[in-house]
Image 1: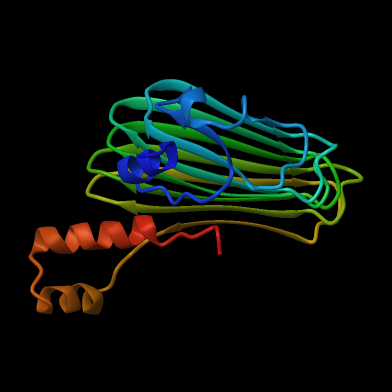
Image 2: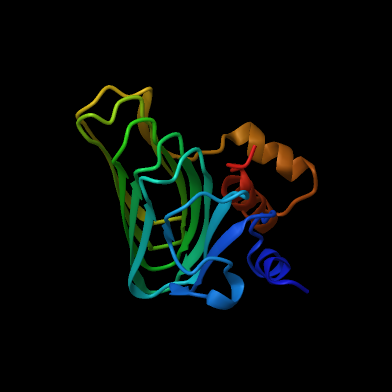
Length: 232
């Protein structure tokens, strides 16, 4: 079994032929990675795939840097994490690579208190950063999601999107704060935050298909968490 099959089977992360940078439980894993770390300082024939999986606790940092000599590079970020107690994840993405896009998602199962701070820095014209974050907030959990897109002066024609979405169980709390700081005209710049809600006909349909109440809840969770594909 190769390393990427291991990631797929353990964490249900979609893998493909790529240069990889893998973190598990907040720690860089050189044994699963083809690159030395999260700094991209040259072009690669293959896409670059950052993979961030496992259970996190305490303070964690993910700093991705795409240097100015990188051009037209495809970069992906797949995150699937679990929070049992208290955890903070600080994500910094600095893109200076002209015509280079980073497209990513984070799926978070939160059973405790989770704080996420995302800063997406567009440091050159025609850069792209697209991040989708989905949180499943279990009973009595608390989630705080902050995301800021920074498009600096002289960095025209950038493409930016920060998207937050959550599905909450009883007494779960969530706070969204998506922000844009724009000093140049972008091609696209959007941000959004939403709470997933399922209506009575959808739930009744699942019941009529023979699912119990518990099975319905599981099916709705799976639909919410897995309805993301950044690779299309």
